[in-house]
Length: 182
Image (tube, helix red, strand yellow):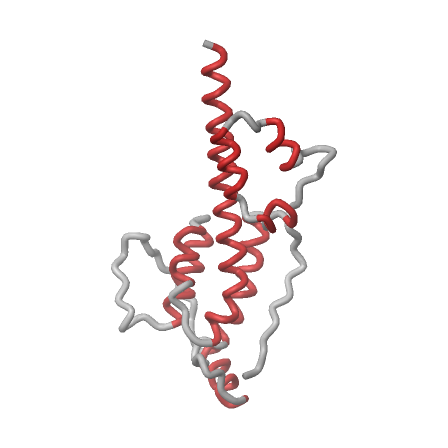
């Protein structure tokens, strides 16, 4: 099976110990707060060390993943030869990107949905900054486009999980501040 490498020059945003809060120091300072301790252990270890991609980096990466997934939409799980890739590429050139509106509440019929429809929906959700639904819909891909989008899906999940945990910490800090004030 031919391997398609998607190289990306975007960088993960790591914590700068001089300007940001060091997670180990932060965890040590809040050792009496059980909620903060539980949240800090919920972060993936790689996330604390390597950081996560920003929304803009994920959006830029998606445009590359989208174009590659569209070109290989007709290639199945077994890969195929050069002719399968060439045929899929030629077919993708004749597919038009018509602007459409989708809703997260739309019913999805997997028997009638192909890879072109899935990546069109995902593109719409990414343009609307709805990465949750974009990830959900991208997980429905099959064949070569699923393999191409795997890293983007994983990095987006890490971004969403880290953002959720950070929002929990901020909300907890606000409640603790209000509670200590009154």
